[in-house]
Length: 351
Image 1: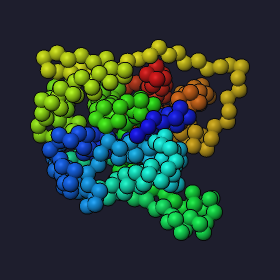
Image 2: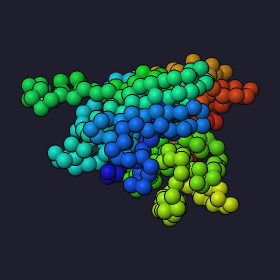
Image 3: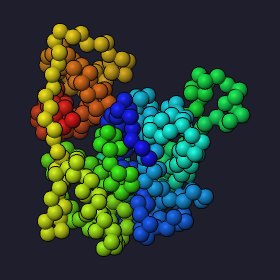
Image 4: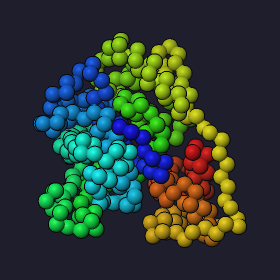
């Protein structure tokens, strides 16, 4: 699938269990056949059983792209569980040309996502309780789009107001309570479709806020592809294609079969123009600012609000909201207002 347009590039929240554990077919060599309807994955904690749509089969890299595009639309509506969406809007988010073939591709991809049933056995992380739960089972999402006949009978306004996508409640609860990873969709869609994008998601989740992340390279590939074994051919192409492509985003080093990555930080200085008046906050931005103040209880409220407001304008309310969630779950004695400001400055420097 093609690259997102510049206007659509942004950071987007992806729920933690999904970003790390969603089984995707990336090559014809995987042990998972394209006609296989059930897949059992051994995870670090327990197992995951996945049942796919009986007519469309397992998820592929294109379906992962669609999931990211749907998440972008969700972000536009402030991360509500149920949000307006159409297949056409998903197509636009993916940068695909308007055609019947592309609409069909998007429709099939959405159907595969809705038809995929996931059952976690001791492996679903419940962020509210900070532990892995015994059993969790759900479909990723559901949706309702108008039929061609209905489209001719309603206005465009009614069409967009009543067509929707809705997340499963378990996924959505984790998302809003803070178990997610911000994904830079500009970086994601700049990469070659398929395993390179999948590897990027996995490494971003593992890297988190750490300076670097290391893993045995063979285990890394097995974790990304959810296979118990990988062939020499797959490993060869992973090294010369996937890792080479990822060098535009990470510093990559391999020593003694251990891969180590660290993010390439581009020099960036945050500047807040003094003479240029800032626009008023939107309702969503205002709620984010109020939430920051309520959680941090700053000693100097005026300075704190003005500073957080500048970061909202600079990096967006969604990323500030993510930093607020991290502040809530912080460890240590640093005051929450100072902790949040430090996180936001660090977030800007990583842009």
